[in-house]
Length: 79
Image 1 (tube, rainbow, N blue to C red):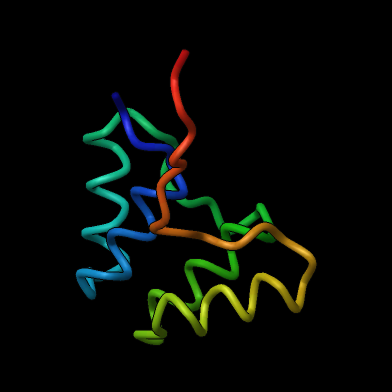
Image 2: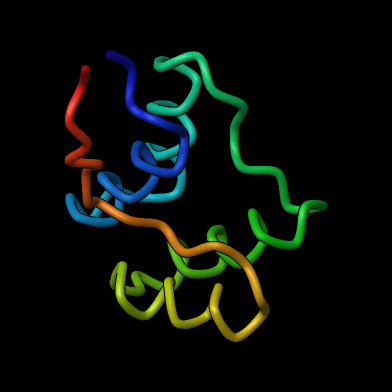
């Protein structure tokens, strides 16, 4: 199963990847790169460029009423 775009980005934060490496990983996984004209992406770009933690990035996203990034997985039972 392919991880979501947000999960790929969250993994990049967990691995302290640079903005450029994050963009490359998004391309490699078939997702659109972060685009500064989208406000949510712009916040994530800012956080990556300032070496913010995933927690700090999620707080910024929350402050602007955007969904947070998460590393949690859904533990739903499959029937």
